[in-house]
Figure 1 (spheres, rainbow, N blue to C red):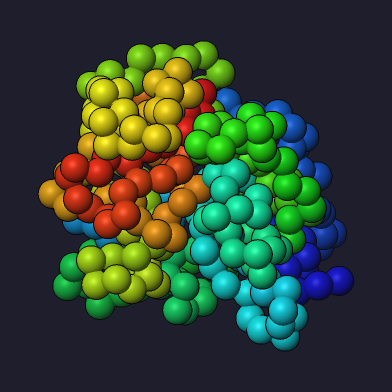
Figure 2: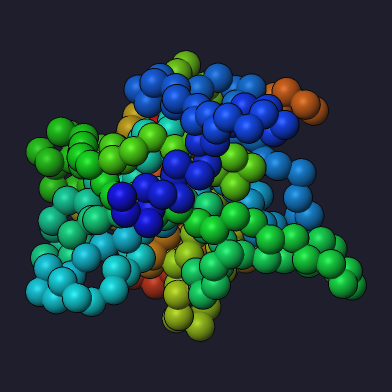
Length: 300
């Protein structure tokens, strides 16, 4: 049994702690979307208000896609795209992250998905409980699970302009939900996103031009379709399947954030949950420039 599978089996242990017998919980069906009592819920963690940093496990559905270089099988896997866990067996991402084309180098091939990640430079991840605190909270070690099947949208395969830029990744083994690994909600009924504020997150490039080792987030807002039509006249922006989003204060998704979720919130108080409104598809040649809005594939 591989190290990843061993780690997953540890997460499946259940039953009363006082009983000597060891039980393993069977996972729920992976093809069924969880209800909003399970999905889109963040654990009670310290949140950094007004900042780009994300609290430890604040976005437990975030996934990091890991690729193998086919020219060098001994080389370590590299992270190049994001995704979001939507059931215990499926991760939602952008089709251009998993289909050979102009945005995915020919030598790279999707191999695994990493869940429960925060800072890619350490494992496990730890954070101080609050500023000035001498106590640290540490999350469980992240999980890496092989991808069993890649399912791109057929519309993307038939398109030359990034329409239907969305794909599913079926994991080799179902995961058990924990405070560090939970799904984001997928709405089955369409709702108006006008005047919505969105949140995006990822390990993509920052203003320095270097990829971030720590998960970062930003707040964006929806633009009218005309803004994206004007910015990308040859890419045939389609408001029925794509979302045009504004760059605020130079903070935007960037290279390496592709495939990550465009998140929105529904409900209030204890009934509040986050859902994936879109998938990061493409933006301008330079990240964070206001004349180049970002384009997301609608997820609902």
